[in-house]
Length: 433
Image (cartoon, rainbow, N blue to C red; front, side):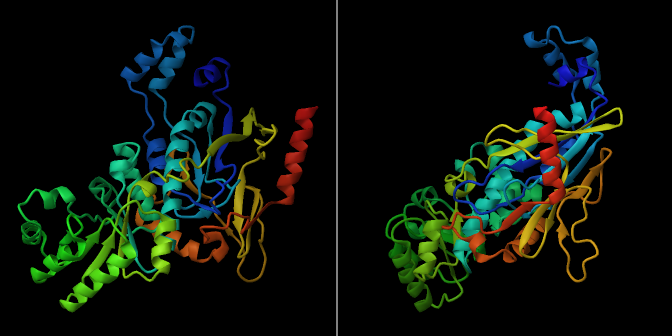
């Protein structure tokens, strides 16, 4: 497409694209925007090396492409604008996560990367928020890299899960790259590598001290708890990875308390998700933390958020043309947009509108803000800690129905402004004509 735009002389045209989710999955009432840091870094560092250009030049499909196109790629840079909502913002169907306004080639080429990083991380952050909601006062740690769709996906899943409310991740690279807390415990192989369970616990305590978490279900869970307490303090706590977690956690809690380990914590792991955790929480199990792996790092009940990237405006020779798709079930709304969040609803308006301006008292919040202008970063790079805090504060302001794990309904009203609806109808008539 970029080569075609170049050959057709469309390089001077400026396009506006929006990335959004057309419809929410059946079991989601919102999604959390995440992945902006990686999107920004990609745009700021978008380059083509000579090796890459030579590869493209050698493709059979490109044998008739003008040589000037490949020369232009060597000087390719993103010089456009990026507007986006803050990472951690809860959004709904049809609302732009980000807007790219740039010369045609610069706006089109990033499509796949932006969809991949924003879609994946938003999906994982949303899953994490649901799990954290179900856990109540207990903490949740992301444990899923070994089941992630790739090692790279595991790193980003750790970041996204932290934004969604997890206290940290077991992925040490995520911790190092994004400065988020890391947690982990020894596996069953550690226990089985020693002649006795007690020796395995002794060596772990010798190594980690008060950070020791004893995995106590390798042989007999209750005996494992007694052996852990026989070592004397300090320890962080114990981990349960199998069996009836409700009954075992109660019995283990009693063993810990009777031995004077009132501050020792109980962590539960093992094929957990938000629904299983909700059952455990409702039963009043004395579990302090959950380690959630497969279901979180892959969002197994919702493996794709279905994000899309569509052109909504095109400017050539000073003339702006609004673009939209009108096919059944896949229509889009023309014109660059702004999201205006009121206390009880969202209105998607044109980027040129100022809904609520001049209203006394607390007016709506405009969610899309400039991030890159003319190829330069505006302000600081998005940060996982700030995104996590923003997500928690924003989720608390949503109605409880929005955060429900069972209700799949329109629990937050989203509507288009009158101006935007009028524009869409005008563009539709022009296209039909």
